[in-house]
Image 1 (spheres, rainbow, N blue to C red):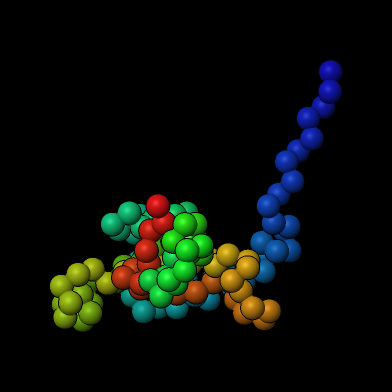
Image 2: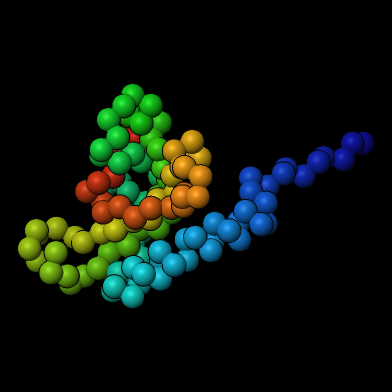
Length: 118
């Protein structure tokens, strides 16, 4: 009988702590501005691959460039009243190859900047 080896984690504990240290302030900022977590909006939800609408190259269209980590909504908001649509913001984790040294992998996008990847 052979023992099965545990699957190695995708990130080390140190990497996970570092990512949390980057993500937490972004979440806190949205919460302070009145945003609250939501589960889904027009197919956008945590864990879904997306690309920014400004990324107009074939790799972005095929596989996306980021994953949604947090999806939030502020309601009521002046933006919602002015534009007649929900005020949604998200925090995305960009792919490794899209991040420059010293730059956070996380970024904030409004929902209308995100495009779902087929």
